Image 1 (spheres, rainbow over the protein chains, first blue to last red):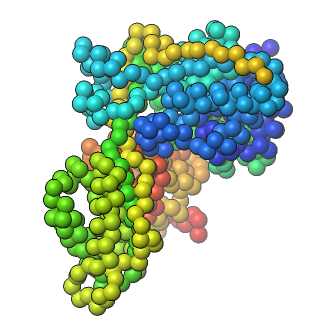
Image 2: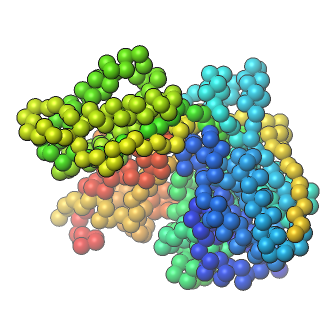
Length: 457
Length: 114
């Protein structure tokens, strides 16, 4: 008989929007070997990493963790969560474990052992490494520099499968991991059980976004994945959804630079030779994927740093004569602001941006339509400054300049902008992705720390 | 008779999204192999076209891949501003595909989608 492992993916972003329970309860009727979930994303901007803030509302995270934990403990199967808290910071890991304690207490669960895998990297460690080597960019513009590290508040390393393997060697029931390669969440246990590495990673790659791998596209619905020594099967659990060869192969496009290759710590998944076939109404089988080992094991580093504090104002222009002159009006306000606050250096002490929604607010320099056809244009003024006080002041100054503009052919003299509010809105502080680099390591565990805790009711 | 049809009438999916913090990636996905092959054979979707549609230099185009297994054409562009940085106006990059919708595709015989 063919040996296999079966796992369940109910969400591509734990806590980002609550899991839909219908297809989840359908999925847990299957004989499962473990349950996984990816909680992270780099898409939600660098703020959450830099500021170390949770990405999602506590209630939603608790909702999702409770569904998964209760199902896992009832079946005595492992639960694996990666990129806790969204950005995978140490606080994110601790917060999730704290939620698990609450759930265990509430439901009087039998004691279980949790591995906490921490993935924050001390910035001083990177400074030391820079003394003796070059750290190459992944997405960043150039090699890592001391100057970049000086502008960085927090760095996490993205783990591959090895820290998970080490955690399971410690005899744990649950893993709460910091920043993790999404696919490693599902690849690690099958790999530990001797399944082919390429299929383990391809299982992870297809499961990590849950129902986004099926058709029609749905979010937060459950997908079941089964791995054998020869193939991976994916089956949709929502009654209106199917996994088809097109949908599964098509998922390789999603949020990736290239559809045929996917780099991981330690190697590359190559799907040039992968075949996809429908094996039942709602299930598709893939096989033939290859894993090409990297001679040097490299770990992706993600870092974010504070740029400044943010203030916003919102208003709109409806006057067609004003709209014709709007670029000119905004330029003159920018100039007037510089004169009024000549002790501040524009671009250094503050950055002033006028977003013109109705013109090029979405696509900026990529916008092909040069002449707006809009009859009204919303102006969101955004100021990012080195202090909140400066940001607030510049935002208020520009708002009142917008109220009383001067332009050619002007008829209205009582006000030039319909303000949504006349107060300045304070946004979250502004962060930037600073580190997006690859660090070679001798041991895949080098940047990660594993603590084990027993949770007893 | 050959006429042209806008791409959105032929493709099943036309979308954009971040691929990491520094790239926008665009997927044009077709319903079936036949339609995909027909569009591919027209040779219309090229790096030159992408440069023209988005007004960018060739150095911004990281990939243009014909993905036969997915009946899809994928384009990846380097962002001018990384996701979430000051000046980024589309954090997830999901509203950057618009110029692709109306790419004129030479199309003969029956007009699909009509």
